Length: 195
Image 1 (cartoon, one colour):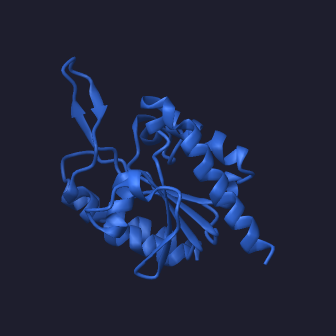
Image 2: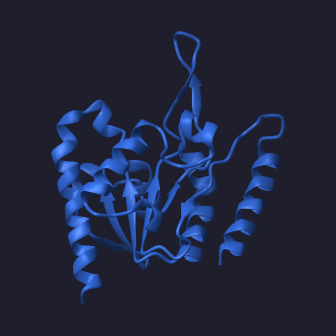
């Protein structure tokens, strides 16, 4: 199965190289257990993720790991990926390259690849982190503020929407809500495991 993931990644690398000829787009692919019960889907890689070639290794990744630990979930047992596989950037007023939200076109470009990744891993639960992956899998009208912390079935997929861990950096008042959502997820997974 990991061979199929490797083939999919190689195909995607070729496609992006063709589509963005002349631009150097560094793809950050998903990682983790290829048969994980839980798949975490974030928005897109940031600077640290692009430099290290791994999803969720920057500040948001540290927040995520901290909460997973509190809930007794181990990252090694999960599969972690993003809806968009390259870093969306813009030039800041100060002339620095900074992150920006992915465009609708970028999300649509990668959606078939995300769906294929989901098919290959076949997780029991897909945890969407923030609005971008949530809307990619459910449609443009869903809002994380209304959907977080509750399971939902969409096109045969079992989703559990949560705020993006980066939101805690900008809005520390979400920490307790985030902790509750992670605990609820962990409790549900334990109950299912114990029958």
